[in-house]
Image (cartoon, rainbow, N blue to C red; front, side, top):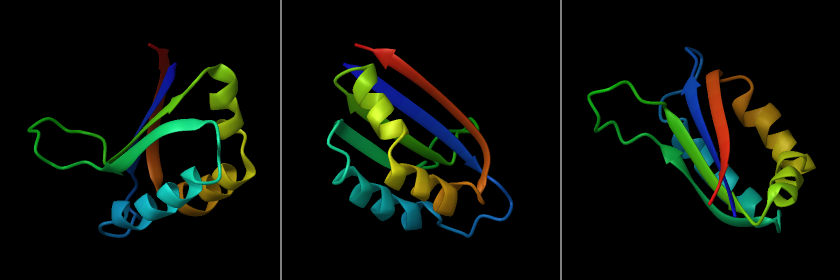
Length: 98
């Protein structure tokens, strides 16, 4: 199994509570990409005293090929361009196997 984790920091142009806007969009996207085995996403809860990312995505796939199917998917790229590109100040991601 492969786990993909993305941590996003919004920029100053991001509307308040923007995580509540993008979460249902991502949850709908998941229904159209068969290689996704598990997908969790949402805004940071704000319970840590440390500075956290604003939004987190955790996705699981059977293998690298499944992750690549997701990463290169046209709908996924459309959502990235429309909902994330204008508002992401910084992005960190990593993939691990387990």
